[in-house]
Figure (cartoon, rainbow, N blue to C red):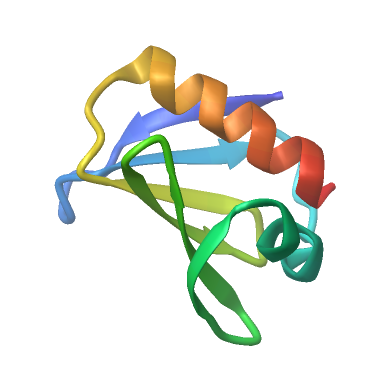
Amino acid sequence: MFKILKCKDKAVYTTKLDKQKSLDLNNISKKFKTIQKTPILLLIEVDGCEIIVHRHAELMFKNCEDKEKIKKIAEMVYKEGI
């Protein structure tokens, strides 16, 4: 469904869907604590991790290094956004 990658230049983890899709940012912002909202991305907080959610279905995990936690959160976000 998606892959977890270490971003080389930003020192964060990212997830990307295997197939390109757009996410429903409005639905995601209703389900998760939203810190900032723009037309093309959200900044949300889940379990102490800040996540930048791009409309093109890329998630960038700030201050989160636990791959299992990233996988769990990404599954929840994608479930609400697709």
